[in-house]
Image 1 (cartoon, rainbow, N blue to C red):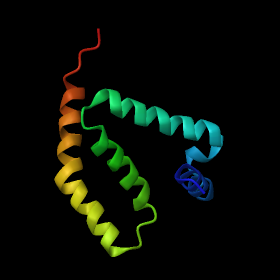
Image 2: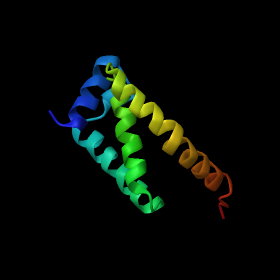
Image 3: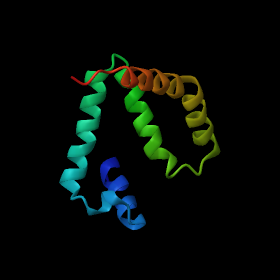
Length: 94
């Protein structure tokens, strides 16, 4: 089963708002997020890894995996999310 199918199946079991989405729509949404990340930042690999790690945290029962994701949050993701938040706050909508 592909990663998208695993995530969708989990959402359906939990009754998430994603559960109402068709499999095709869910996969399309993931593609859109990935494409936006590539367009919005030169560090697309980090943003895509963040998305992947976020999906893994739902199933992180392995201490080594949890520690790796935690280090990624502290060292890579938090600074980039802060910078993105600052960029968004400074946007002007004309």
